[in-house]
Length: 357
Image (cartoon, rainbow, N blue to C red):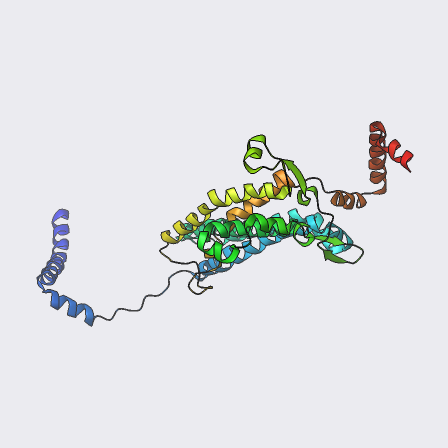
């Protein structure tokens, strides 16, 4: 009886299935014109963005602007502390910010990281982490490279102009090179700039004038020196020696990198644009795209120049050592003075200097 009641209870549900099947048959039997007219008759509601508002805020403000602020604060704070140490030590607020700079930077980043985790929205995790990753990659490629360009500028204008000229000559090749630099070869350009202090001197802060200066005694890198030419080459050119700046020898390494490795920055940018099916990054320069389209090779070059300076050029800076020495406590200064005095006495340099006086 129970089974019979269950069958009877299920019998009324059968006709709707038949009706649905009949309707499906009718739909299948309609012509293409009938179905198209019926689709046109149905008014579809406009599509709306179903992304939650909290997700829009997370993607627009947190990922892009906040982390950009944190990265710029960290990098340029390090630069200011390194190059303008005297100015920073004179101002109490700047001295505090300089002393705890890395801790403040890490705290800012950690705050943004926690805000990102708290802004995660269900069913949108993948998109949010996708944007989070892209934000960090963009900051690594753009902001870090830009920071290195500023570092190179502080070392001297010549470390900025010559590498850029190398890339320009390699990119634009013979026609544009002959048009702009036809009468001023690159090796001559570096020769001319090496003789001016405004190009070779780093940016420093002058306590006496309370201003930034680009004036110094050029290092040996920018002083003419005489080099002996190998005997094999002497028989060809007829010269025994040649006078040139040591920087011109380093410019060979810069031009080699610009010719062999620099173009890979352009290849990377080209592949990136093809991946997203775009022609240019922007239209800032009519007919030539944006700034990034013109400087895609410069970022690799700027990184190489910065690493090259740190590895082969930059040495201990006496002025920076003196500035740091003056910030120590009196007992620490006295300890360093006695240590330095005994060291110079053991070498005989201090006694010789006293006798000369």
